[in-house]
Length: 359
Image (cartoon, rainbow, N blue to C red; front, side, top):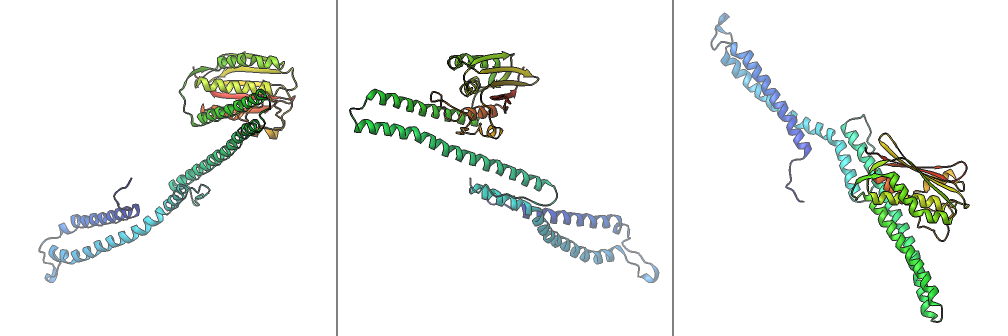
């Protein structure tokens, strides 16, 4: 949007300083006139008839006062220009940093020195914003690269299978169709997971009152056949824990947590416990599973997209797409909550979700 050019902030401050100084000088002259010259008689004859009168004083005082006013005006303009420049120098640094950020350079920082004032506070806030933007952009670029790599794999497999079918008409078509269906299903699951992760990151969803205990029960009931197949004991306990958010996203969050707990609960015959409770203004959903020990240095990477730890054993049936806990983390963050992952000393993992509670 084009706008008409206007006076710069430095010029406005300069005119303000000069105008204030000129007004102060005019008031001083007015005070002199009111409280001094007005009491001098128009015609007074003192000793030898040479005493000054008001007329002589005015004629003598007026030129000097005019020179003084001009000097104050010039001094105010020059001094105000220099003073305004020094005052606005930090703003020029911030403007240059904003211009560089607009051109795509997010690594630049102002790092303003000096004592704490309004400009220093603004510069620090701007540096913090740039730091968060750079981190977010790097995360998005890394995610896009990983997503492209993950999506390319099933597409390449599908192309290979189709080439084999074209070159070898005698090959069993049923086997090829079955493998194509499995690859296509994996690609669809990955795409849906990416869309769900993007939806959670953007926070674009309607909010309503949701009871986490009901969400946990529904997730456990849905995944009970998978747990029974793996001889995993799946337990749900606790009380009501209400929060405000998307029932669909919170159900997906619970489903991912329970499914991860079941799939990674090796060897077979372990236990998965889902617990819900409310602590004051906080609603808690905790999923705990037995299994193999999880190295502490692996825990921080579990919520990153497409990160599959070497100790997180998966089977072909539920190989996953590497987005389970990343989606959970995104949904929890979009609902203003926190996600904690703590390895159990005896093996397995304890995942705790804390969300703002509602009455």
